[in-house]
Each structure stands twice: as C-alpha cells, then as structure tokens.
Length: 162
Figure 1 (tube, rainbow, N blue to C red):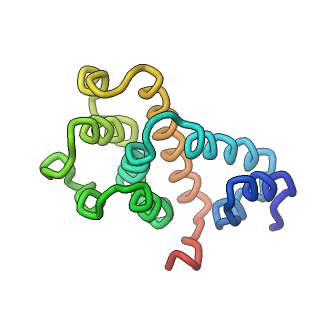
Figure 2: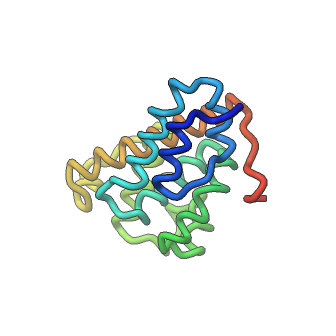
Figure 3: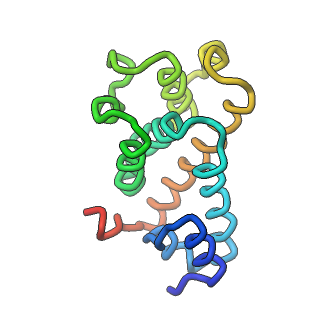
C-alpha cells in the first residue's frame, strides 16, 4: 500500500524512511497522519530527556512483548546514551543496581502504565515536574497503543533490523 504524500513529507522532514508500521497503517490514511504526528511530538518535541523517554518506551515494549518496538527502540536507546547493561536489565530492573533514582521513577511509571502497578506519585515528583510527568504519560500511553496496534495488525519487524 503506497503511503500518502503528506506522510512521506512528514517522514522526510525528520530524516526517516517509511517502516512496516507506516505501511500497515497506510490502509487507514486518516489514522496514520495523526498517529505519526503524535509519535513525532513524543520523539522530537518532548522536554524530558531522550534517555528517560527511551527507557520508558523500551520498558513498555518489554511488558507488551513487542519485539517490533524493541527492535526499533533498543538501538534508539543506545544511540541516546543508555548503556547496554541498563537495557539488558530492563526485565528485572527492580533488583538491578545500575539505575539511578530518576530512572527507577521512569521505569516504575512504565510499569504503572503498561502493567497496572500502583503509581508512586512521591517517587515521580521527586525527579520530575507536572509537565514532564504528563510527557511520560503521553509517551508511555502512545507506545502502549502502538505495541497493541502492531500486534493486532501482525506487523513484521523491518528487514533491515533483522
């Protein structure tokens, strides 16, 4: 399915090539454009650090079992400066000694969003203000939705990531 011109333009503006998620959503172009806008806002316009956002996204993807999201976002997290040891410790982050307090707050919030664990407002507020907390909520919820869309549409991992 060909991508709409406006989607190709949005991707070109941020230096990205189309991926299988875009191609799958091209069947519903009215949904693709707004979702892409939201993803781009999370990725390129958020004030919270890229490392914290990628930790959040990778933890959500891990909890969702989204191999597609992990294939895309683990390299992004590494590129953002997240050390490999932290990425390897995501599954058991609570017992890992490599995360600082802010990272633990982010990971706990990812668990709240994706797994329904109790939210620790004190821990989150210790490290992040209301604006940052809202950005984490939007980022985590967006990638939770994307993970579920990927699963429902059975989107395969892009060939260049294998």
